[in-house]
Length: 168
Length: 168
DNA sequence: ACCACCATGTAATGGGTTACATGATTTG
DNA sequence: CAAATCATGTAACCCATTACATGGTGGT
Image (cartoon, rainbow over all chains, first blue to last red; front, side):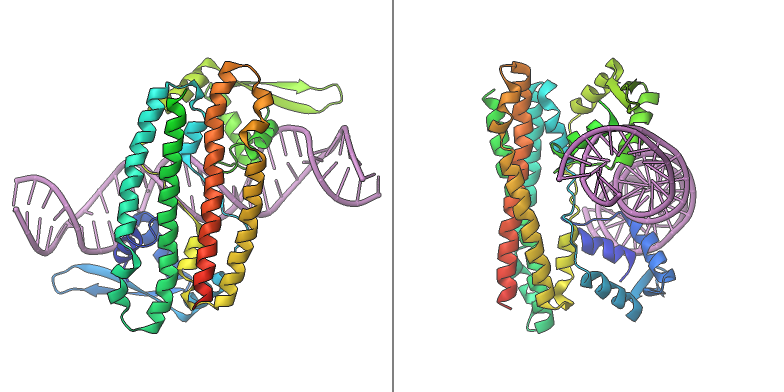
């Protein structure tokens, strides 16, 4: 697919656990082509809409499988800016902190609704009776499930924290 | 405090939502001193143990308060490598995936136990009857609480995912 | 006409990681 | 005497973000 396609696909699939800006995607695709992991061809679409479409090579697939083969042994380190802000909020006006938390409560409520609307049975028709896709779908569903659980955790934590601040 | 102190403090306080390597800490402290947010003095400890101890300036405090004043309006974007791996695990041997998940289950079990052992009433004695510290402690407890909830979510998700993979 | 979306790139900067580098003190 | 911990730094590199930059298509 093209850089643009990849960007769109990422936005509504891996977006909640891995994202990239278009600038990074285009430069990385070029670099991967240099390394031999991808090939590309420019497609001229009659009406001069130029798209550069990439295809993974066998070497590229081999690299992916290699990456999967060696397990991740460390716990990924979290970076949550909102928690840093809460950590230093002792010197802050409580009402300001509450306003910020309420705003994030709204954001995460919307995010949860979005994930729930993407629930597995929605893409069931796409999978159809292809057993390979059905197998992959289990893994995709698992990552979506993480997203749903994460949003629920976030909302529960926000609610508990707001409650505690109101009791100060 | 010194760079070394900061590093140790971060490891057992903000570690689960913000971390930094010593190389970054030392260079950033120097940069903040240049910017006038910190001052430092070298302390020679009789036995020639040189420590460079930093103190925040009023300008530095003002910067911190400014940063707190302007709310975070965007949702911080998550980057979870394990989820990327799961997303691409359709082509993988199920047993390999399960082994990796089991390993992470162990890691997160240990992490949860650690957080639970740090539970707020443990640092109650430190706070004593200082009302300023008591106020701050509410915020610190809130971030620790997030950590505990996060580890529980992670474990529940791992268990559900392992169950589903075993049913394949 | 303007806006949203399709489509692609480069450049500058900033942030973060790994590796290189050193040396003292304390504990088993 | 070896290992862990205290203590500090630099350099190279890589990854990621923001800003700069361009131009076509389709709908209201």
